[in-house]
Image 1 (cartoon, rainbow, N blue to C red):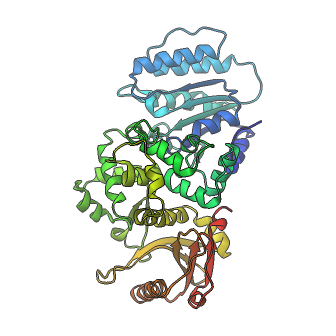
Image 2 (cartoon, rainbow, N blue to C red):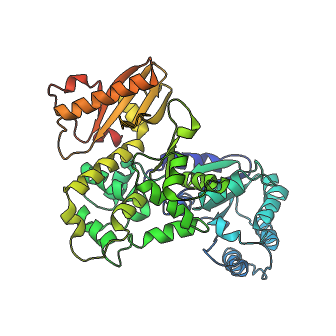
Image 3 (cartoon, one colour):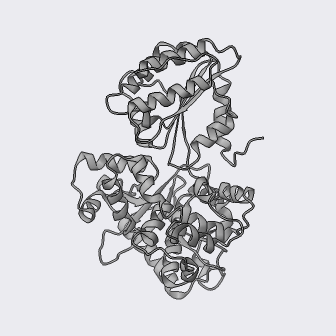
Length: 472
């Protein structure tokens, strides 16, 4: 019985690849701790012809020793020691040729980026294996997996050498959605209501490994105190490991996310350079792209499509929480997070966190609005006028001549719009229409936890989305 929660689309894809009549080269990538290895192991029930994994910060000689141990576990024949990756893949070919079992022969190379040490010729040997042997067979499934998303994209998927266009399938594994998170917590016997699940999501995102650290006997606030605010808290120690394991010379990557964490509205590239003190170079562009590929930041194109106005926002929930609450704080055994609940700082954080949760669930919002089948594009927008200071975090620009201007509010009960909030929302709409000169109808859309109180200000709202809709 599979232990996989959610991942229906990925399971469907893997099943389809398993049933083709040709060899498949599958690249699986996604953020560290997102569950890539677990998905592959569980789907194939650990029934691999060969499985081996790279280990962080080992030299070529040590990686080869580890491979030797792996291949000898999967074979009755004891293979001799190897000195190069070309010899490794020759042994893999021999193993495949002598495998008598029917069906597909599955080779799973995990954390592949760690095998590509300096001057190791690992990717050249991989090219040799696929191009001269595996691709000519009809029964080989080669799965490569890495948390270093930028590495696997640049060296495998977008390879310009012998592996160019050789990857037959790609699976990008994203964090759990709210629906998947709810199912995962239920399987762990953790009893949180949906409001608490969203708060948990704001802190950990849909990262299975982080969610696994929760103690079902404790409240959410108690769990956060244990995991983040105690000196030995597991998620207090995670930040440095996270970035150093993904990026070589990780300091500049951390500088980028630290800068973005202080500007909730996002920054253009030029603003990022200005506030971070980093140099304007192609190297910076590459780092921004790598952070985007790894799912830490997201770009939002302006409606006017002027590239220099593209906004970059930090969207990794764990990183946002760590940089805003944990970095520089004193570790304590006291109920630190418990005592912060519902103070001004907590309310500001939860408001912003809920906005980010909504942005991660745009498909669910479209479904609620009944526009899932209509071509539409998401944007953020901010006024060019410094005096106005107006920003809209989510606009849904639809092909049916409508733009949804979305306002997101997180509360512990139905949201009651007052005169000030109403005026602010109408002002945003007016400034947006005047500056963009849009001819489309602009619909005000409120996204709240428990819905809106239907008072005198409610009539100006065209559509409502609640947190329950985000779990669909």
